[in-house]
Length: 101
Image (cartoon, rainbow, N blue to C red; front, side, top):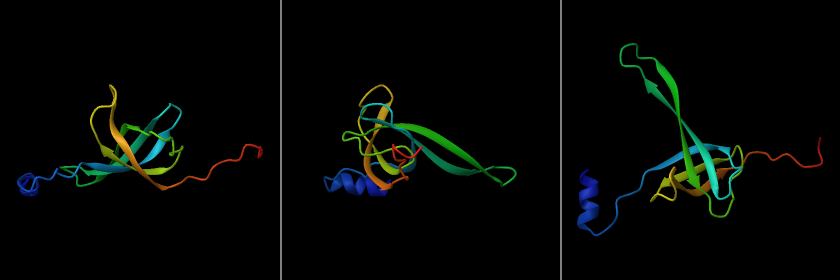
């Protein structure tokens, strides 16, 4: 919180939250569905369990495809469920060729 106060005093915006995840759907126009996986430690048993959250992100140029690892950042609401924006594609998934069946 001290960094936010320092940024506000300097006239800068605080850093926006960003996530790294895998694209699970790229069927909609200008929208991708990103699954972000993380681990949570159980309070009593100290074991780690896998959790995931599904986020809808705005992809203006349609550069992300199914299976790509992407970085998204929080932004103003674009629609009812879209509050994230694609920053960059980190790694691309191998694409299947149309003639190879």
